Every structure is written in C-alpha cells, then in structure tokens.
Image (cartoon, rainbow, N blue to C red):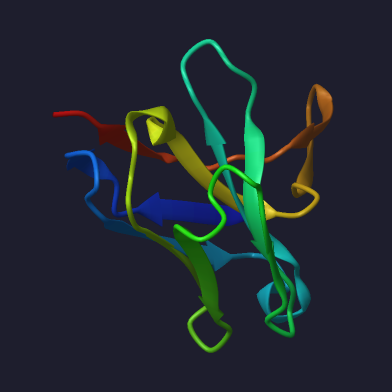
Length: 123
C-alpha cells in the first residue's frame, strides 16, 4: 500500500528556513525520481524540485538557489531544505514521484497524494 507522509511545515517569518521530510512506503523508492510539489490557495499544484535515483536535481526558477532537495534511500525519505523563504512560498507542500504515483481505485486510476504539510511565510 502506497503511503507518503510529509512533515516539517509551519509558520516562519520572511527570510527564515524550514526543512521538510517525506517518508515513503509501498513504492520502489530507491529507483524512483522523487519530487516536491506545492499548491498555493487558488492555484494549481506545481512541481518545484525533483531528484533522480542517482541524486541529480532540478529546480523551478522561483526556488533555485534557495531550496535544496535531497534523499536518503536507506530511509526511503526525501527532504526539502528551504532557505530565504518568502510570502509567495506559502503553500501546502507535497512529495511524490515525478510523475506522480498512480493508484487504482474504485473510481479508476488516480494520482496518489499524501496529506501534505502547510508552509506559511508571514511576518
């Protein structure tokens, strides 16, 4: 059974930092390209960064130089270090494979998403 559990969000002032964690189970984590996505109020969910099984990374322009993705294959965990946070980074952050994991439900195949973790950047 697939499970993605995100943690580490919170309220932080502009310029502050947070480190998010995501524990994965039920997937072939070590060979999966993993990503962090975010969804701000009224906006579509977007992929902000991803990391391959070998550790190669890429970042959306809006977070490049401020966010760092990493992974620990022994722990089936992916991390997101976020520095120099700005109010526009406020969103619910999710981890998932890239592309997202698809699960079969009674309503047909659907992308699986965990509960996410809220990041709020405000003074």
